[in-house]
Length: 325
Image (tube, rainbow, N blue to C red; front, side):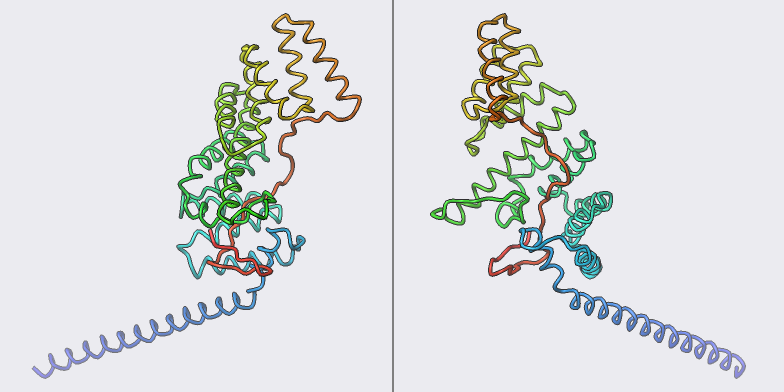
């Protein structure tokens, strides 16, 4: 009996000793995690000026500084660890890497953001621009189309917005709401312009025609010469020269110095056998070239700017409040 009791006591003692060791290990682990979290927050506090710099850069108030962007990347990576469920840090990292010229990392972080929230209009738009620059027109088309589909569904963007890559000047009498509405309308039209450029690269003239007609029907954009021109181009390539002439004439009503519309209007009349009118249009084309007044419709080139969302609810930048996406 005593022997069994001793054995039982040894077993209990062993269990308690192991349990005590386990508790000690867990406590050490807790302290380690706590210290790591505290260290990350301390680093974020040390780098707290970098998000303001990136925001100022996005609105055009700061010049590019590689060192500050490296600090911003460090900041947002820590932010992402502290708030792992947030998509905001991922979008900020994508933007920073884009400014550093590292498009592959930009794409990686933007896709990580979309995994957390697939309904971010501007991230699809940004990806469309990057893929277009990389001549990956299928992926660019996909993301521009998704941006269009999400434009009116992404209420966070509609009501607060981010920092747009497009610069706007509005009448001082406009209310803040009306100014934002006009800005949204302009951006929506830009989505269709970007989509049309993708279709043009793919020589998908039926898709160009559909998108251009949609652009023409948008009530928001006063100057629709771009959409009329591409509707004319698509009609010309599809062999509908009557329609092409109508579209090119409308394009030239809005922009009489558009050399591309003038040239294709000339070719349309020639295809229709209207050589007398074609000669008149050709003479006008020559005059525009001689006087230097004519211009071409140029496709987007180079490393254009993207939408940027500051990862805070409200940021003060030179007295102006910018809301979070």
